[in-house]
Length: 146
Image 1 (tube, rainbow, N blue to C red):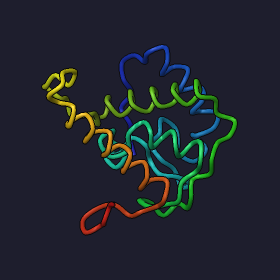
Image 2: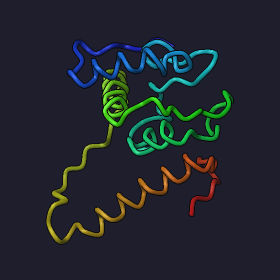
Image 3: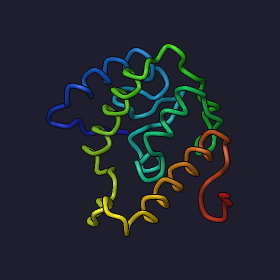
């Protein structure tokens, strides 16, 4: 898989690139393009609306059962600090954006009292997605998520 690099990385993403290269690249490949040992992270399956930052955090902190790919389970990475993890997420998200993978932009103001239910729904979706990721529940057409 060819990954387009952004013209420049933010400072956080540059720190994340170093942490990614020292730990994650062994399985997820150079520039998160995937390898024979692990899936690409620059892929629609890992887009923020399906695998939010919380899903990456859970995978690193707890490991995760294989559910989209046939590479086996992802081991937890206890050597990662919260700062390392935030930086790696910044790096992966910047790679994803450079390759057309990004959040859907919301055009509504979510700060007032009326959108409270919408904020709760967004949080519920994130929690359910993270729960599915950590439990290995299969997602996709016909999959049940409770």
